[in-house]
Image 1 (tube, rainbow over the protein chains, first blue to last red):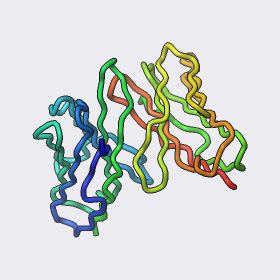
Image 2 (cartoon, each protein chain N blue to C red):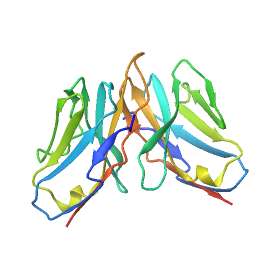
Image 3 (cartoon, chains in turn green, blue):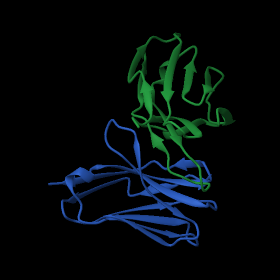
Length: 115
Length: 109
């Protein structure tokens, strides 16, 4: 398997623009997670899905952020409108639960810069 | 908060030495995991220890867990330059866990 795939790897956009980040989890995995990493706040869980259903979105910072998982092989994280403080590295991760707890497999991340 | 706090924030050692990092947390957990992040990359899972376990080994890695003290340690033996990375502990229940701020390890050749 190719692992978790994220696109784009880098995104530079102007304040006010819409940004869409994409993720393809590992085939067969039933959990998908979106994280944000900054120097100031570290790694923050934004939202996670189980079998394509959002389970916990309490980490989503504002209504400007939305995430969808239309099928088991694709998820998007959208920011509209974007602001400079949204600049961060956004990671997608997936996992497969057989015994209740398993490790998460992370994608390479999308580095977002909002100017 | 269940957030783990790694200690030290940064650690610099010579190749061949052992590196020890600690993680403390505040509330009850059912598992604790350690991850590594190389610069510019995603996190990579190293080892998981459940709350009913006290010690686990994986290659040059040794993890201990003391639930009475709410703390864990990660020992990397015979360190190599390739071990240079940030190391994070993640604590929680089931799939919902929280990452600490990490320890930056530098292994000097």
